[in-house]
Length: 197
Image (cartoon, rainbow, N blue to C red; front, top):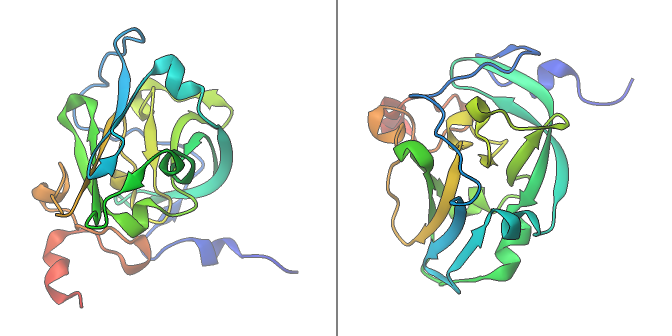
């Protein structure tokens, strides 16, 4: 029998579930379609701003990917629908010095990613999950999904992407979580960074 066995897809220290637990700091922000916008700013030209209708008019894609939470659960074969980051980036030119992206979200949440992780083929700005609009607790109206990293990098309630030449730790990263978050290396906590080469 060919194909990947489930155990080969499960990072160390993780347990498989078919549920989709809700883990957030604070309540889901209120969504107002008339006021919502999405911006692309920083070391990029041109700077972009989309309202809700304009954002949903951008090319839409569907992908299937696994999802790994630092709290040790993993969920296989999530179906995400939205705008692939690679399609968004066709609309802009990055400054040569840009090395990181800071994701800004409603509720004061941020997270940071190296540019090479953010530009992965499987990274998507999703508004649907498993055939339904995202629930507010799961990030409606827009969630970044970065399947290769722990789920706190898959920020909920995304409002802006800021491209920068400097790394700035986000909400969980300044509170003791690993700056990179690779589940296959169990990069869970910042104290582990000292031994990383």
